[in-house]
Amino acid sequence: MSFFGFGQSAEIDIILNDAETRKKAEHKSEDGRKDKYFLFYDGETVSGKVNVTLKYPGKRLEHNGIKIEFIGQIELYYDRGNHHEFVSLVKDLARPGELTQSQTYDFEFTHVEKPYESYTGQNVKLRYFLRATVSRRLNDISKELDIVVHTLSTYPELNSSIKMEVGIEDCLHIEFEYNKSKYHLKDVIVGKIYFLLVRIKIRHMEIDIIKRETTGTGPNVYHENDTIAKYEIMDGAPVRGESIPIRLFLAGYEMTPTMRDINKKFSVRYYLNLVLIDEEERRYFKQQEITLWRKGDVMRKSMSHQAAIASQRFEAPYNPEKPPNQNSEDDS
Image (cartoon, rainbow, N blue to C red; front, side, top):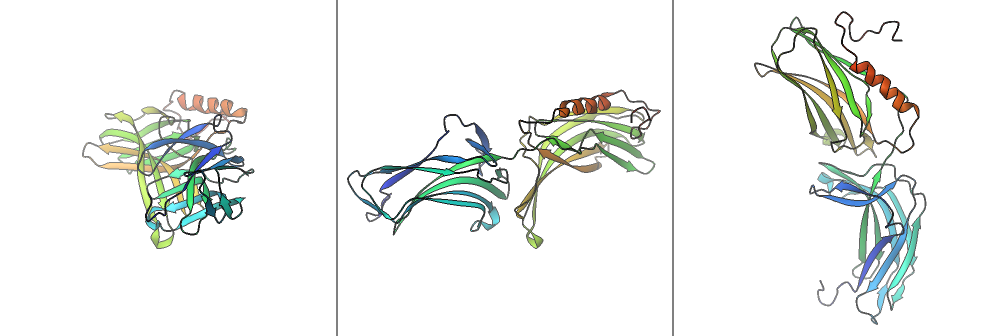
């Protein structure tokens, strides 16, 4: 819109060089809407063209320079005025002067560091974008193009199982075990629950996956818990010596990799929460953090073998004479 004759006299478009072949990924915006964006990884080059199209051919456009920026920034919703930039690269496309016709400018940001995953949460947003600007004396003309960044990991060397107990003295003793503590986003949580002592009437049992987003520091820390998944293990009363297998597929849920202390601004952690409810509606629960990671294309060859061994171990029939957390010499 033009006020008193001062309107934008040119339009800007940013076109990526590999726009026709580059993969796109869905990403949720602040309002919960999902859109598709061009997908990039750490270290990839970002290149393309900036088209500056004059709205009124033949009319000169004076400017104080044309530039393009590649920016990675964190925005905390309770501090909207401050954008914390962790990546900021600038390329000058044209010196101050004037345009008499539409122009196209090439740009390239080589092997750009993109250290964190794109994220939109309850209280924070981490985004990467290109911004082209025609600088003018009164009102700049600019255009932004958002991209999505995924961080990839390889199979962790150390991935020990999780063993925990839930107990009420002389009333309840439950042991539960998960096959590992670190899972990729398409993984399967395999485990077993053992009822060693049951003297209260349990009506319902479930496992929840909880995402905890932490923003801020010191007195200004905000925690947001979001239940990602609920998995019913049992509906009815168990008996002593009974064991219940668990298989929870992660691929159907919207999750990100675990993000710890990102640029000292926020964290995203995931927890398995075992919940028991008795006939008097009393709730007993035990929580354990798990680490989530995004699987890269090049994986260690031993991964599938290790996963198969772990899965077999947890799907073996339960022997009540042998405590579940002790290994015989043959197992070692």
